[in-house]
Image (cartoon, rainbow, N blue to C red):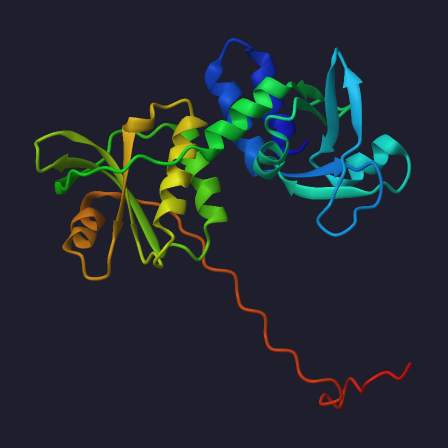
Amino acid sequence: MTPLDTAHAAMEADPGDDTRRVAFYGLFADTELFVMLAGDSAGDDVQPALFDVEGARYLVAFDREDRLTGFTGEITPYAALPGRGLAAMIAGEGIGIALNAELPSAMLIPPDAVDWLAATLAEGAHRLAARPRSFHSPQALPDALMQALGRGLAQSAGLVSAAWIAGVTYEDDSTGHLIGFAGVPPGAEAALAGMVREALVFSGIDEGWLDVAVFAAGDPNIGAIDGVGRALPVPAPPPEAPPRPAPGTDPDRPPRLR
């Protein structure tokens, strides 16, 4: 069972539950998919294999490479890209996605659902003008939101050194909840705000439920939110690959002559 299998089973168990449906699409967006191609690709020019199903065109994608080869029974050219990238690539083309054919999580994602997903992922976060005045302990946080934020932070490794969720009161006396980030490099603010927005959308929670703030080094809000907020686990940035020695300089690995 893959994570998509589990999310699909939960969605199918209660088709009327919109929260489970959007949670599935949120996981789909972050999952690497293997798309069957019509032939070997030439550079960046890839042509997915298309099939007519129920009056619409569909490409075939699997969430594991061995599932694709198991379906075709032979080595098959494919392109690997996340669900969000696939949706963006085919949005507006009238193409759907046949996901995990002949497997428990098999489903047809019709073209209009692909267009919805691409539009949802492309929408930017809204800028908040109010300034925090004080922070307090957050209310109970929905499990679906915490899971979505965990996935987003895992993909944002290296963009943030610390993160908290806290209740907040603003200077205009309005209240709410806020996620604060520290140690964010310049230019990454929009990516983090978009990640939080997606976590809310795909958790079935109103987008205005959680605001986003990025604190610069030395900002007194860091100490204030750290004292009462809920700290979120932030993954360490991936280690840098060690420099490779020049050919022939390692006595244990002499150069090979051809």
